[in-house]
Amino acid sequence: MNFEEEISLLIKSRYPLVLVDAIDENYVLGQLYGVAQAQALVFYSWSLTKGLRIGSNENSFYKTGDPVAMLRIANDLITDAHSAVFALSDFDRFLNDAPTARLFKDLLDRIKGTPTTVVLLGAEVKLPSDIAPLAARISGGYPDEKQIMAEINRVVSDFRQTSAALVVDMSPESLRRVIKTLKGLSLQQIRNALNLCLLKDGCFDAGDIPDIEKFKKEAFDQDGILEYFGSEQKDSIAGFGNLKRWVSDRRNSFFSDGPLPPPKGLLLLGVQGCGKSLAAKVIAGELGIPLYRLDLNRLYSKYIGETEENLRKALATVERLAPVCLWIDEIEKIFASSSGEIDGGVSKRVLGTMLTWMQERKDRSFIAATSNDINSLPPELLRKGRFDEIFFADLPDAAAREGIVKIHLEKRSLDPALFDVPGLALSCEGFSGAEIEQAVISALYSASGANEKISSKHVLEQLKLTRPLSVIKAESVDFLRNWAKERDILPV
Image 1 (cartoon, rainbow, N blue to C red):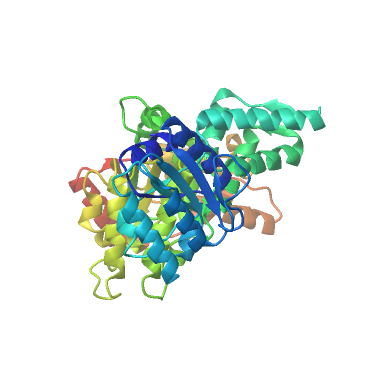
Image 2 (image 1 turned 30 degrees about the vertical axis):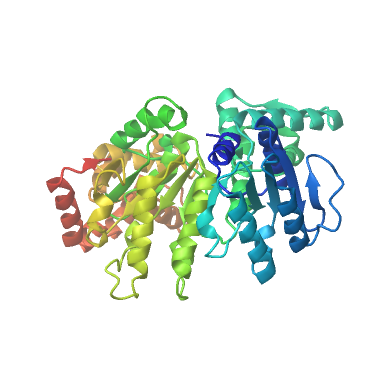
């Protein structure tokens, strides 16, 4: 249901009190006015500065800027033949005052079971514990996709009137992604984001999508717990054939409203340096959604209750940012002490919150979690339903190593055709992708120091000087590989 359908149902269900978390007050008031008219209810709006007004009338009742005076007038206005919707802006801030709270509770008692409803508007409405059970809470007042498309057309049209040189080069796929990204923003925020893009270079194209994604992140994540990352395309990672096919098969269902449910996420286990983090970026790129990493350093706090609150805010932000790919790097660190014996139960509560959200969320968010230490993962996290699939990133085989060498040569503007790529791939057996990349970087430094043009010889020298993790920590790596093999974990 959209916002108007949801609020209509609550009013028809005779809820005495509804809380609406919204950042665009005027937009919500307009929608509430329409809902009230559709149900033949009188519409009243109130704010501290404008007082109590009826319908679209700019004139207010006498001296109703005061909350107590407003409540007394509202109580007089309500009769059996005069049902209404009262939309009160920021009213929750006055409920710490005893007379105001008492009058408000009396008003709610009077309208219980009647068609009259009180709607409280605000960015984060908070109620006293004795009033909260009476209320239904919804988020809303945000434009749907049709309204976003209309606003895009309006902004582009307005901009063209001042700048005839505006260039619009947006494919249907890119436009769909722009609309999905703008969902959850108010009309004013949508205008601000679009104008920033148009003013930057006088062009509206797919290159503006990262800027819009960044704008949305900054609008919602005030605590900085979510870190924005650029995504990657599948050509930037070698191997991972099973993972690429898995994501490709589910890409269309992620955005469609058809019979297939959208994918929820996956867990990438494996050897360190084998491309799990890069795979998370590729997943976001293939799905065509922005990528945000949950910053575990900012999540945990020394103050009691603040860690749980930080996680709650971060997950709420993810829901508002959706569609989005949430990257949880080294997820085991969140639950390292999930027994609760070391940290006073913090990690246990965090685990419970995270598992419930993963299981019950309805938004279009995709979780890409990575882990290097399967021993630290709680069993509840590994069961079906938390993740759609679990993949194991092993040390790259010969074909994947060739691909990795080519990628890192091309990344540094070197022509792979001038190198003995198969020979280099053969020489780095047992190396992770990160170790191969570092060998290429070290070879560049070595060739530069010798004032020579880099060649296969320099890369081969660095490979011979490197002791890979599979040798240094052979027991740990072998344990991981055997664990995945015994449990038939799907290889990437």
